[in-house]
Length: 530
Image (cartoon, rainbow, N blue to C red; front, side, top):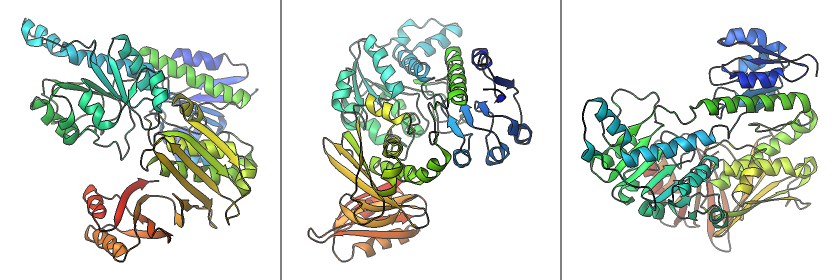
């Protein structure tokens, strides 16, 4: 591996640099603090680039990266990397999704302990010269019920730590089976039941349209009086104003937040000054061990890829021969869209995800397409990034079986990808193909034949096939200034039922969804984002 060069453009621990410099034939340059133009001026000679959050890998940088094969991010977030531009150039983008898991889980447990024993308030009182022993009476955690929302990498670590404190753990995770949860010693319950039973609740889910303001005034009203809440996941999952009201009214006994809607928080943030609110400045991943761990992990991943073409924790498409990758990519993208669509429909307690490919899709290789569908589905329910490489392992952790099938029956199309999600409470299925202009198209959903463009915000509506429904929908949309760009309809004539997809520009507010669901003969309305 002669004349292979790696640039480290952000601060990296010595342990990570040592890994890179120990690889024979790998030349390493450590140069931080470059702006976009400076990086563009040198990136052309490098085969690998290792970054943290400071370096911005823009389309301009990628265009100048004539020899770049891999970008490695020491950490989880890759918002500073233009993934589409990198993928188009055939550059693999990697991260370290589990490197911070232990540190973040420990921070959540620490916040919960601090809440229970009022440690920060007691410290502040002592440093002010007071001795207020009776004021800071705390609560035991032993034998209390902890509700864990999100049983991904971090959530599962929190479970084991809480069990070590002899807490009873219940959990909620839409992509984990009851059997798998039971094997972890966790009772899987619904959201409302978790709110009603938990003495403490900790959040470990991604910020999605479904989890935005998941904890609002209605959720707080359902919680036990005196319960405590910890959020070390993402800002925006908790309605911060509603949380203030719940704390000041005495409904909640305390809350600890490490993440916020806006960071750094403004001076007039509603929780500043609320005595039973503990606030930390996004410290979840901030330990020396975590920083060293992600540095070592990304250094090893980049070195393994440059040496042996081994891909681990890739955000975009895994490395394939150029010709195959170019032909396969549209079908992987289609499968991701189908998986993401099904992941936003009603929960079925998924047990199996079956991916069937026909025509060209089947000939090119079912496995990458199936993993794309799996990643698209899981990403709707997980805090950590999911990609086609990591998706099978995440599915295995949750007791989900992935089935890959190559079929000759394309049902009238030259090639199709069909994804079926089977669970304890039902089945969801979606079929897609590639349009004449190379765009992903939905040609079947829940047994209905349809031909719809996939992308953006889409309303999925089921209704009885009766006059006036379409007009009523149009009226509600028009009154709220929501533009409908496309509408496609599937019909079951025997049952007299219709399924419609409404592609709209922008978001659909909650009051519009309420109004749509109230239309006569409408059975259900879901807003999905692709």
